[in-house]
Length: 506
Image (spheres, rainbow, N blue to C red):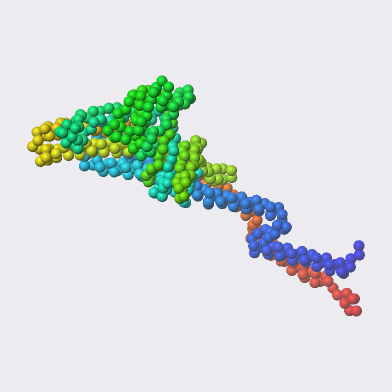
């Protein structure tokens, strides 16, 4: 093949251009630290880089956002659940003291106040928040578990359906015909009959709330065979239910009757009624409540119910709520296709029965304090000029003092039994809370393990990403130096190859 000067020149220039391009490419790698600056330079590296960058971004999201947020949620939950446990433990210690009645008269009011404060503290934990979200309200993270203020309960009333186990029926010791100093004048005048205090035992079914609306609730019993029957008016039983407003007759119940006490939220069962339902599988009570106190648990978080809300124009808006028996887990994605439940539901460890039993304890102490004050008042009446010179009055006051001493002994006995029996109840409450603590603690431990695993994965994928995209600076610099030498050599060689021809002189 004939080689011309033009062919040599063109080839030399073309090769020199390649050497210059290589120098340029290596210079760009050294200055940017990257193997390529455009996908077209190496599509394989470009595609792999997109996948690795996406994976790194996802792992970074899991490690620094999702897992951190989940751990903070769970950590806050742990603290709140521990607070509930500690307050229940405080109540348990009071039960230990009350069972032996180590309380002094001067301390009783303080104990009552302490018990009420403990109840408020337990329920207050239901309103714990994290990042503006309520922790224990299930999916309703914008709604407090309790009525936190007057505005929250304004214009609300509820029709509540509460399912109760027959095991919740308890025997309650009560004192009938308590001594009342204010009856003295009537007794002396013969218009009032004095009766010595006596003790009685009744069957009590406590509803979730006190201060219920007037009217009688409907009660449906499910027997062991799954059959539902209307307890009141049941064929062959002739059971009746009546609302009782007079505290003197709260616990005077007919064997075939049920006393409904809206003030205390109690159903007092007659003997025959109790025998009929004690083997049932479930008792369902439907009742109304329109007056709530700040700190009360919201019914919709615990029961199937209908909320009636009075709007600004006076109309009523009804909303039905159904308890999700499967629970309302809030899940965080903490790794690829790996989810973890971060929330605990308040209904699992903050219960109405806790507050009700604390109220019962406080009321028992109040009963003893009241009769002690009654005795003090009666003794003062013996020194009252109105009565001290009246033999009949003095005799009656002394008889009432004897009765008051009997009543004091009965109420102290009732108080001691109540505190003693509730030791087991509050142990059970603490066990329930401990179960939630165990779940929450396990969740936190899992998150720590997942965080370690994700951190390792992120480090591995960052290394792969760097290996795919980044150049070794030292090697690239050496290659660029070598390429520059080649380029400079090509310049010198090309200069000697391209010689002048005869045409340059024509």
